Amino acid sequence: MKIGWIGVGNMGKPMAKHIQEYASEFTVCDLNQEAAVDILENGGKWAETPSECAKDKDILFMSLPMPQDVEKVSTGKDGIIESVKPGTILLDASTNSLSMVKKLHKTFDEKGVEFLDCPVSGGVIGAMNKDMSIMVGGKESTYKKIKPALDAMGDKAIYCGPVGSGTICKLSHQLFSGLLLGITTEVLTSGVKAGMDLDTLIDAISRCASAKNPPFDNWKASQEYNFEGDEMSFFLELAAKDIRLACEMARENKVPLDMANIFEQNIIEAMNKGWGKKNSGIVRKIIADRAGVSLDYAPGGFSS
Image: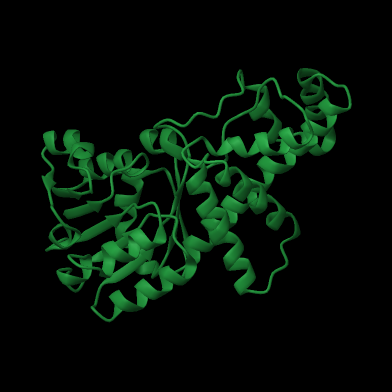
């Protein structure tokens, strides 16, 4: 099976390497050829443009940072649309906007290309270990056809419904993950400000009925208060994009978002401090700093 992959960033690269093992022929495309060196050394082919990458492929994946990147790669100059053949299955593994997903589905459907949205969750480590949720929207028959390829990439693929359903599920998860980060940080900041030490506070709350779940387990496992970004991080700028898209989706459907709107403002404040390339968990610092509290440690960002 001939497979192409566009976008080998922190998340895209480990996923691409898994798919390469499944493919009979594998072609990769990225702005930075050096990012794909090990894929090429393992027999992969290099494409200079998305159009070249899409040519004569059975399956084509995209894993890109922003909706505008997906649109440019799909329909811009030297884009996928210029060469993709009818019958190709095009999967967008990016965290995209719902409106963009529906727009691209319509565009490619007119070309006879089967478009599915399949955003993922699990972070870089999950991508490396095939320990990821893959939320798929599109024709169920197409999902069943490409399920073996998805299984090569992650162990938790789920069919969510028509095109856009995977994106709805992913954005809902991102909103949940972000709000959880904000709520736990606010609760602990309040307790520390009132005079408790962080260890005892977390231990006490974790024993209570409403907190017998993972949120505070993350704090217990933390050893430092460090939000410098690295290749394993889910950067704040990407978290900001995900929360913005989730809030936009809710507003388009006239859903009031009391807590989410407040949390988004915290993220905007963190972005305005120039923290876009730091670990997304740095938004915790905004909450604690407002209270004049220095937390001894905290987990990293929310899930990608």
